[in-house]
Length: 239
Image (cartoon, rainbow, N blue to C red; front, side):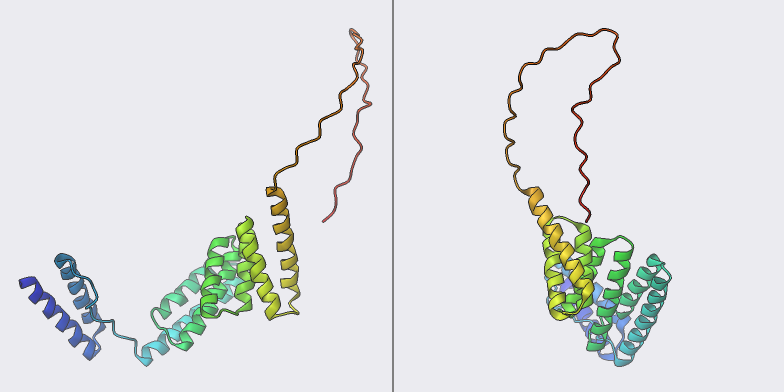
């Protein structure tokens, strides 16, 4: 009974703090409710919702994120991909839980930029993940599709290669004049065909014809050799 009373008081504290816009008090009260719920074995369905950010807080978060994005772009242009990734990550952190249209657009831009920085630093899995986030926000974003395709080609394997082909076909459908996407698509299709050929079971070799018995002469202390079995030299095909 005492714990139930404490929980009810914590709920009231959270609601009162939310009404006056005291985010720190809300957080403290919610944590108290969570602790009591754990002790009581109760689900969290009755916990108060967090206080949404004000318009001023949204504007400040967007300004901070944009500044970090610009700094990330400058670092990327200078070839410092690690610093670029750090600045883009800070930009996303500044936006936090802000989820209006402006924030979603900025998040898409930052994830897209970070995908390119990850790709340039050899982190293909992270690049593909960031590009996928962009595509959840903007399904027809050609840059995200192209960058995810590049990352998937680097990851290799039949599954990634087929996914890269799918992404590049989508880019070509959105931008028929995109020559870079067309080149990458042709390369990805070659990779896919090569992988299919490599995974196909090899044909059994034909039995070698029986050799006629040869008379072997024994020659002692001779350095002479007969190189009549040299193979023809065949140049490799240029790609």
